[in-house]
Image 1 (cartoon, rainbow, N blue to C red):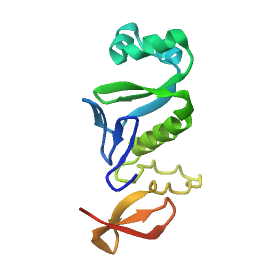
Image 2 (image 1 turned 135 degrees about the horizontal axis):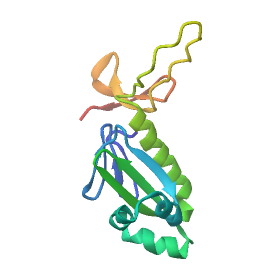
Image 3 (image 1 turned 90 degrees about the horizontal axis):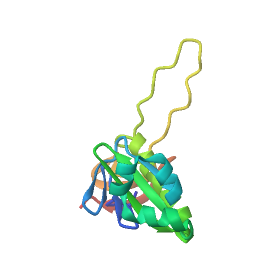
Image 4 (image 1 turned 90 degrees about the vertical axis):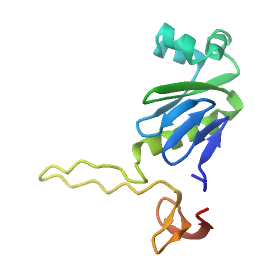
Amino acid sequence: MGLFGDSFEGITLTHDVIKYKRDGGPVAGAVARVESGADVRRRVTAARFIMLSPLIAFAAKKQVGHVFLTVEGDGFEFAVEVPVKKESDARKFAAKINNASKHKNGLVAEAAPRPGVEAPAPLLPAAAWYPDPSNPAILRWWDGLRWTEHTAPTN
């Protein structure tokens, strides 16, 4: 994520929160999907479908030109219409949301390995700006594998 978070088509993702207009909540546990209007209609109940977005009903009928980036979390859900030409970007942003959802402050809780079973390699924190390990007064870019030379002020 960038210094202050990432955004796509009006959705803002920060370290702990995801927002779209007046909806949103904690990113922990949130699930993002890129779906056609018909896929959304099949997945959600009729009442939720109507509340989720009137645009979905229209797109489900025409089935051409748009997909939806849907996000469901603890106490919130929303759907954002995305032009098909931006579907790849929507999928990348959905992956960022899902990755952030699984990581708490860049760490994943892992189960203890079973006896006699080799433990999997640990997951590394997602690429993002983090407090510099040697100087918490600055941020340093973690590229997903290692610290880089890129720094930024914390405020």
